[in-house]
Image 1 (cartoon, rainbow, N blue to C red):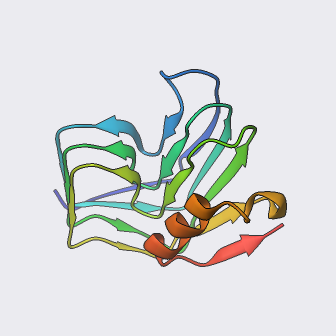
Image 2: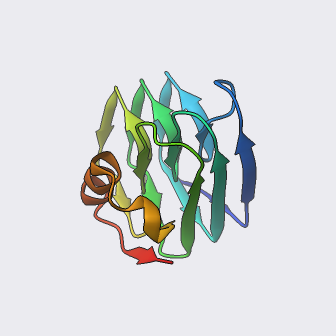
Amino acid sequence: QGHTVSGIRIYKAGNNGSDVDQGLFGKSSGNIRGITLADARITGYINYDPSLGGIVGANSGTVSDCHVAATVTIRAYLNHYYSYKLGGIVGENKGTVSDCTSAATIFLPLYQLFLYLVIKAIQRSRCPVWIQ
C-alpha cells in the first residue's frame, strides 16, 4: 500500500487470449490497493479482443486508492475490429474500482476512432486523447 511504480515500458503483441490484457497487471481477480503508476509507457499491438489499462488490463477483482500520473501513456495499435476496452485505470472492469484517479494520455490511430466502444472507453476514462 502506498507504493509508486515508475519507469516501466510494456510493449506487447497480443496474438491470443493469454496476452491481450495489458497494463501494470494484465489480469486481476484479486485486490490491488495503494499503487501509483508514473513515467510509464504501455503499448499494445493487439489482434484479438484487447483490454489496456494503466493499472489493470482486465479487472474482475477490486482496485482501490490507485493513481495513474500524467506521465503515463497508453498506446493501442489494434489490428481487428473487436470490442476494444481502454482506460486510464482499467481497460475492462467486471469488478470494483474505487477512489482512483488517472491523468494518463491514451493514443489511438485516427482510423479507429469511429468505433462506438472505443469512444465509450475514452469517455469512461476521462483522460486526454491524442489522435494520430
